[in-house]
Image (cartoon, rainbow, N blue to C red; front, side, top):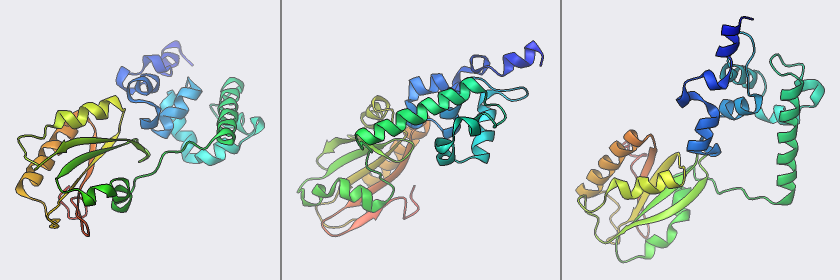
Length: 230
């Protein structure tokens, strides 16, 4: 393989925004794709493929669970995985196994409207409106909940920066908005619609998905996503 092709297969010669290691530092490991995480372990590609292409190829053929069960002898049979890369993967395997034996620190998954409501069910009893933001990583695991606003929601008073500054701080991949209607009517007001529109637009600019805006009352739930408004 020529020196020029070898250079193309090094992570540091990829554009900065595509480098898995730099993305891990800026976005956090929870927000990287599977192939990016594997690419960091592999470090280099092979002839004709850069490291991200190699990682994608391996994951298309072998599931993550299967990779985590493989022995040294199995790993080195995979084209593109040499002795050093196999050892790195095996070390990561063992560290994961030991960590899981010590403590299960898994974060709660928020993947449905019901999951969201469970996280903020106390809002049903509030006599004033409260706007909450729920921050998730790329696996829809709950990272943080933030109380954004209390009082009658007004499009002029709720600013996207209050929501997305925390998203950046938490390295969140997405956010879900939720607020209560003490009146008992779960239908969104004009201000609710305007607030949602502004936050959606800001999320697109920031590269952070706004997955849903949920309104709850004592007995009802309204999901913007389920109603096709997001």
